[in-house]
Length: 175
Image (cartoon, rainbow, N blue to C red; front, top):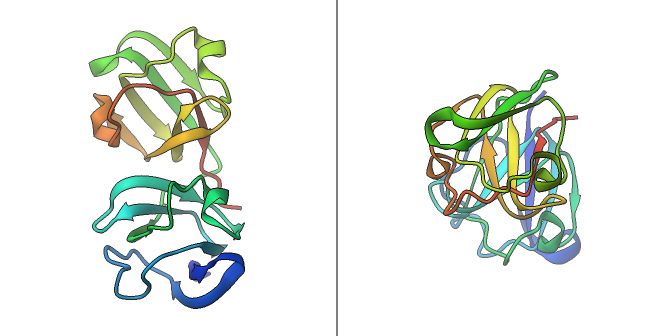
């Protein structure tokens, strides 16, 4: 199955559009701004800036008629890539301190309010053992997003965060 995402310049899938089916470090040559998106297949991470930099937005199959639907801060999408670590098995460990030290919480399911579940809001390191996960700055899957794929993250800046605040996280499932 070929993976596909379609970017539209205007809201509600109107205006110029660009269909993409692979990683793209520079989308600016295809459209000037993005106000709606259709994810036809696969799971994708979009970036506000070229070369996979800036705010991240994780989207799975579905329709996003305006940028607020993907929790966008503006209509700037400048690069994208396919999330390849989708899985049917998920496991993550989060730690209160850098280098996998301090209290640890292991999860296999989504956590919509980390401070309620763990009494901590800061995550300083993480190990993604199975699948791909999205960290959100605020509870209930709100705020800045950060994609974590299989691997080890010794410090929060390794998942491109500016601070260790994690209010919620969920699995990236490609339905």
